[in-house]
Length: 130
Image (spheres, rainbow, N blue to C red):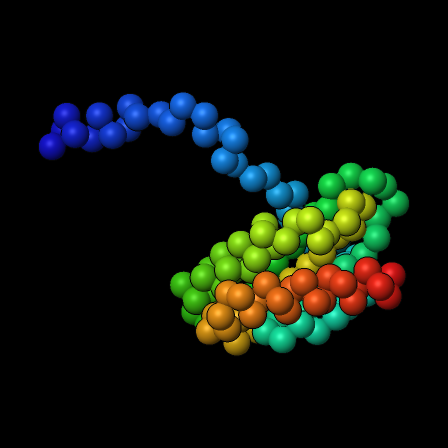
């Protein structure tokens, strides 16, 4: 048993850096509050808030899932689903923007394809308005 653990922990993928996706995240409360004062678009099981920064750096994304959405396991599952949706639609985001996705409980049961459609539609509406 001990030798098996050592063998597994010693395994390193050859080129794991090409598979890693780095997404800039909002972490400071001030950034979330600034996005709150920007544009907002309801998108089915979540709300998207956005604000244009005065720079051309990569877009940043923050996620908010309140306790109303469920217990910790359910909230984390919702957050993971939203994070995956944003990762698959990075070409729809714009540099110099901060986005905040505020999840509702329905986000846990919504099919992933519908999440993608809702997010894509919301981003189009945000960029058309702003």
